[in-house]
Length: 169
Image (cartoon, rainbow, N blue to C red; front, side, top):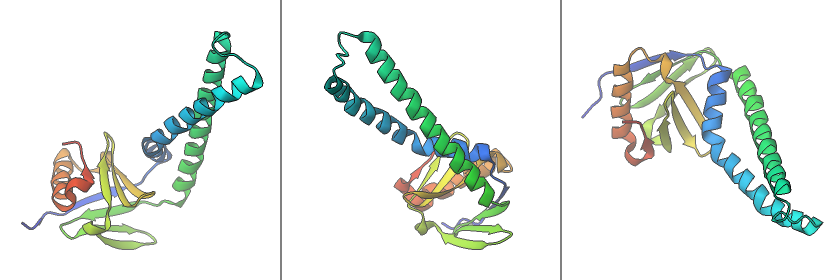
């Protein structure tokens, strides 16, 4: 079955978009860092002579401090990276077709076949396209002309990528 309808989306990604997408992508990293800090930190406190079981306030203070520092570090990195990404992006137009995605900006014109994507995720607010594990492009849903275009894109992505597509059907 050939997909004859093309979906065109013109968009300009903002810093807020990048922040939201980066938090979505890295939340597991934050959880892992926090867990490792607790796993390493508690034995380290015992090594320094603190008995966290006898001094409950010390345990609460320790874990709270680790959590706060982890979150601050995480958000600092996300906000800096989002700002950097914003500086290098320009308004774009992406055309979805049966062959793949054509993206046009002022400085670049690319055509990518569906097979070049390793996975595609749909969140509440975005479609996120991965070509390799740590490199992705995102299109916020608010730039689609209507809900029908989103539904058609879901059908196309499901048909082209199958299990590689993680969509909100």
